[in-house]
Length: 269
Image 1 (tube, rainbow, N blue to C red):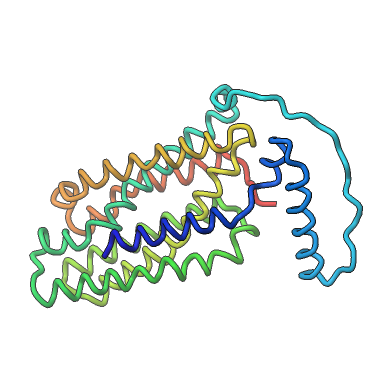
Image 2 (cartoon, one colour):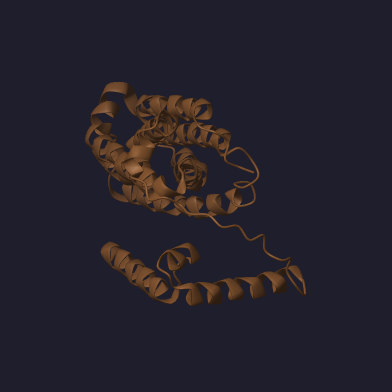
């Protein structure tokens, strides 16, 4: 059933891809100006309907050429290299604890805490229910993500994510299903639900010619942190305790979130 859900999402993505038009920039770069003009005309009509305008201002026409550049050469420049490294290590250490949080709690409850039977079933259910928080968190973020400094909001997100997993760890340790749920829900609500902050920063900090490459390194390669985290989280919990194991490994992510504040610009506005 789990894989079926993924397959359904994949088919939906293909359907959307077949229906959605190419970007205007892509069509123009391929010389398909008529198709690009149709999309622009459609966007203008929708904009006028939404804003109750009868006409749009005349466009400010400017001619320019974007030279072809090697994205890796662009990213190697000091200005962008420090951003790339800061964002990569931020994503690496966030994923280092994010993946274990999303995957391990049920195993932790059974193997480390000794849960079984109805109690284990309850914990599995509550953890799944807490996942609704991610959906709600993304809705909560929507009015703020383009108004406030995403770097500062990222710091808040990582700290609350840490608090959430810590409360979950404490609740599990004392066998309080209420605290377990509150912690997991909080982690989902602000930690997972605010992930758009990370994605947006990984996009906004690089020029167009190197944006996809920068994003693929910062976020894509950064996923390696999740693989490492899954390998070591249970040994860390045994070594640091149920609360320490779910909080102390977050420290590098918090440090990187603070460093990102100083190493990258504010891209809002």
